[in-house]
Length: 489
Image (cartoon, rainbow, N blue to C red):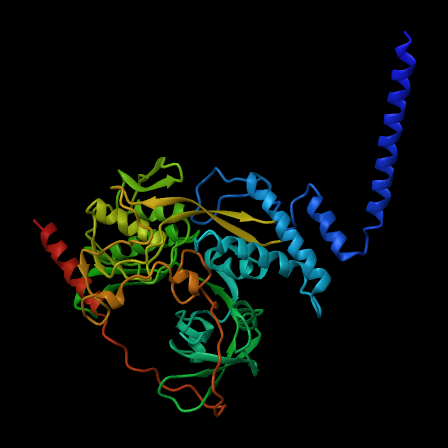
């Protein structure tokens, strides 16, 4: 009993010390306000993740139907979390010592995320800020306001018109494939990054944008006004019988992407060609950068209704097969598939399935070799994080990534045999938009700006140069006619 008073006094003293320490810490915390270095430290010690890393992951283009993780959980899990002490230390030092104005907080956050992703050595695990995310979205949502042109960048980083969309404002105004855009509404775009240039070209329906372009074979500059319109991005860009190629019995469908409406457009095109008497089909997937995994399965299922379409292999080596679906509209139609080194992602799934099931003859060049699966995380500020979670394999188990799909008949556009100089460059996606990547945004009105030389403004568009002969298509016609003859009793 004599010990009880002493123990009680000890407990009361300890409780008082804890309370005093907490109070002192609370008051000190209030004084952190307005001190940048201490603000950063307080943010680093806070339980919440840094801005933009707390949104729930969701499956999206080229991603699995389910199974996404949360970005916030990933950000604070495992031994890597402790390594951020050095990051916060460096950031505090910059805030204290850097001469001149610091960039906005979002710019620092986005730069830190991009820098972290570079350490993964995976060009397909990528971060897109809100502006880039919005620009990329129309390529799969199938509608936006703009001029209606696919663009890319050349080796100098200049914005180049890859091809105007048929019947859209750019084509109607006289914009041609190969035109180099150097000014938008009189403003030099050589110092603008990809997204800034794109946003200047886009605009509300009914407004006019004036493009100043350089064109091969034309002296000086061309100034071309284009009235923007609502652009419906078609998945099926061309449907016809190949009468001009001497094969009125062969139908032709050009598929430019794998979007939400692609399957419906394809079925309509198939039914139209059947109604016109098509006995065989050429499906053109050249320069098709890909799109939704589910759409690739639906497209493949128009031509096969049994068996595996594609396999997914996760990092543990476990595989999951996606099978064909019943109800195809061209199960009995002899088929030739055109591919080249611009055919990527979902295009390679279709081509690989056609090859492994011996359902079609592949003509052209070895495809791009983008065979990985990304989970698409829509982050809280409108930005987007795509994380590689699995690899794609063809039905027989062949890897697509960095390999591509080899055609049955190898031929270049100009009629030669593809050589080493024409080989697919799987790593080119990490260097820019000129090489197609699955869903990377090199779509309508997207591209990159660069330096140009001044010239004489105000000229009018001239006639388009003579078209080159498409030897790949001619060879596809030849293979299609062979299939028709073989199928004829």
